[in-house]
Image (tube, rainbow, N blue to C red; front, side, top):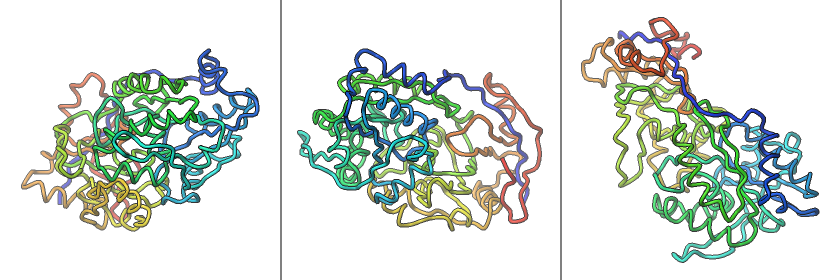
Length: 416
């Protein structure tokens, strides 16, 4: 079967970047409303989630250093809900894969799935907090603030999410996710506010990334201002988000998906698919077929998000750890996202199958795009049919020559 020819292009994104992480964190901790919150002798828990956040180990290390400068005793507490197989050991393993280790950060990691019940919302949802964090003298929340992959609201993914679902471990994650989108959109912020009322949260470190997956902003926020500042930083984050250069695609080929790229394996804001029961799909982009070729090592077999694709490969299928994936997707209640699509022997076989399902379109007519993942969208490949369209875009540069697709001996794409 003839396949479309492809060419590499480069998207030019704009956005600020934090030049020196240590200096920026020190500067933020020196703010008058922050400086006196850590006192000598205090045992301070610093949260660490499961997301692949740029410079996360550096930021946590810098925060731990600032606590030490003020005479405090920092430690790291995994705050990732049901991730890591919903076990204390699994969550430490996830942190280590992100570079968050005791040796690098200069702070002990204390992991437990035990929680304390600390309150209840007006809607009757019980509020939990990690037992180790609750027994500390204070907690510093750390998380990236960005668009959520399941809904749109004033508060999406950020400090309030880690305060509720993250810091509440598996039990809180279940209590919120059991209510579906309503739970995470409407009830998650209310649970976070109850956590704030506990008096245990000292501050939050909000992180915003640019389109290059680099740190664009770090802001240390006193607990009483977290909600207000998170709303503003969310809007800033959305203004920097990368996206695909066109909205209509016949076949989108994704080299790799994983939890280090998005909580849903593939960012739903990029691919325009939610696959949530009784929830309307986004209008753009419109993609007929999505192929996922591989699962990232950082996902440790958690293939949540595979259900957002239409076709995948045997290589991907063989890496799935069903226990980890099922624990995560069942907790989220968005079951379709773990549905395994058609499994083909190779990349080439998957592409040929997608083309066969494109109902008679010739190879030169297929609107094909290949991306490394949904987080890194600076360099990608487009088919010859898309070339005239992308050449008109001010932020796109053609950096390669039109060529045939190249595969190895097993039918998988050569390196990106």
